Image (cartoon, rainbow, N blue to C red; front, top):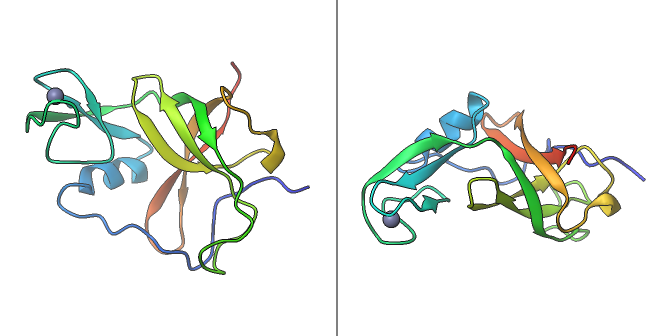
Length: 140
Ligand SMILES: [Zn+2]
C-alpha cells in the first residue's frame, strides 16, 4: 500500500483564463476561492460569468474554509495518459459553504476513502508552474 500523493508528472494542466484567473491565483496563495451571487446568495464553482442558480452576473469572490466531506469518489487505475501515477482518487467534495468541487485525495491510502469522510484542501505547486488543489483527511 502506498499513500496517495500529488501528481508530479507531465499531466494536462489548467490554463488560467480571464474568468478563472482569480481562482488559480487563490490556489497559488493558499486560498480556495469560489463565487457567491449577490442576487440569490448561491455559490458557483467552477469559475463562471453567470450564477449557476439564477444566471445573474453579480458574482463576488469569497474564500472557502477549505473544509468539506466526501460526497462521491472513485479510484483510477487506468489513467487517460501514462503521465498520471496510479492509483489516484478523484473526489467530489461537498464544501462547508454548500458547493461541490472535484479534486484528488492525498495523504492516505487509496482504500481509506469513504463517503462522508471529512477532508480539507491542501495545495501543491506542480513543476509545470500551476498550483493545484487536493484534499486530505481531517479530523471530524
Ligand atoms: Zn444567483
